[in-house]
Amino acid sequence: MNRKELFESAKRYVVGRIAQELGTAERKLPTARRLAELAGCSYGTMRLVMAELEKEGFVRQRQGSGTYISERAGELAEPFLARKLLYFRSPHFGTPSNSFSEYLAAGLEAEAARRGWKVTSVTVTSHDEFLAAARSMGGCCDAVAYAPVSEPFTLDQIAALRMLRGKPFVLFNDYLNTTVHSVTIDNRRGGAMAASLLLSRNHRRIGLLFGEPRVRPCVERAIGFSEMLELAGIAPVIIDAEVDRDANRYDCAYRAVERELRRGLDITALFAVSDYSGWGALDALKDAGRRIPEDVSLISFDGLPFLDGLDPKLTAIRQPLPEILDRAFAILGGELPSGGYQTVVPPVFKPGESVRHLPDVAVEAPFRPLADRPCEYSL
Image 1 (cartoon, rainbow, N blue to C red):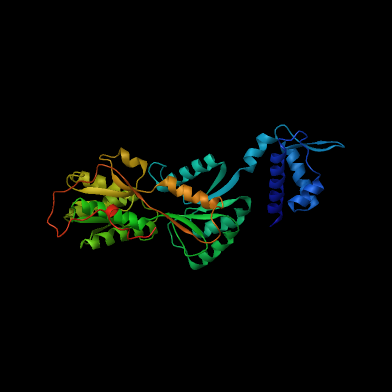
Image 2: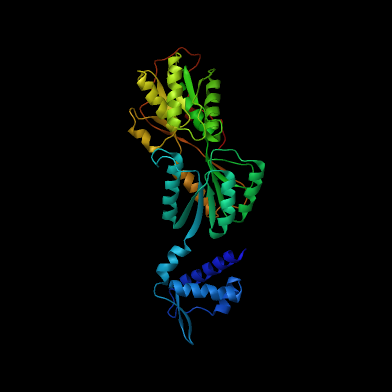
């Protein structure tokens, strides 16, 4: 550890000792030399620690008697001893009601507060920026979490993640075959669930609104959706939304669906790989005179709160945030052994009003919903 980390470690030890002594009658601390031995630091470092604690109001010196815990020590010690989480996230976009990254960030902070953790949120725009920030700031926290930006990891970046092995670290919404713990939704199964729902409602002319090949979760959703349709002998009509990294998903989806409708798009159902894309598709269909769900059924992925305010309320595959955070804090709290564990959380349906059951169609055998079938994707 460098000098700053040694100082912070020694200070944390003494504040912890103060918290233990609060219930004693004497409220007296050992000498600075003894505290240095117990904390594993030099006497000089401990003297600096004690001087700072006295300045901050944790302790008070009595000439010839020793160092005593102040009356305000309990009030001061509680926030200081709170476990510290460094949360690295992509740039802000939208609000917790309409952006999953914001929804995750707000949920993480609320859950951390409930558990007595203190969260420091840091915005990064690339994996390299995250690695540099984690390297410089990692000594001041107890655990690290990262919701990556939408770009793949290079082999060098994966190797650099090993520097975080000394403390609990969790990666959200991605998974790597390394010693890194990760928590992600089963995106492929979620896509299969969307296809299963549409097939069970007798839809056979089905579209897939996609266009984010750099975003791994969206790719997995599209694969799961297409594979389930393939089991029924159906190939989806691909609508390319052509979403660039900084593009607005709503606008891209709206333009793509509008373009395909002008070309004679003939589908009875559409799956959008994100809620924002689903919203753009909904408005494009309605502006073209298509009724939802009477003319076209529509289902999206993420299940964010803003869907309930749309007309009609969109049916979606929902990411269950409480379960995601529960698994993440099990990792951050050190409840799992060291090593790289991929924790995959199953998605759930978010009921809505945008999927219609078509009249029976002539098929060789009725399609059974995914819930009635063996799970094709291991959790």
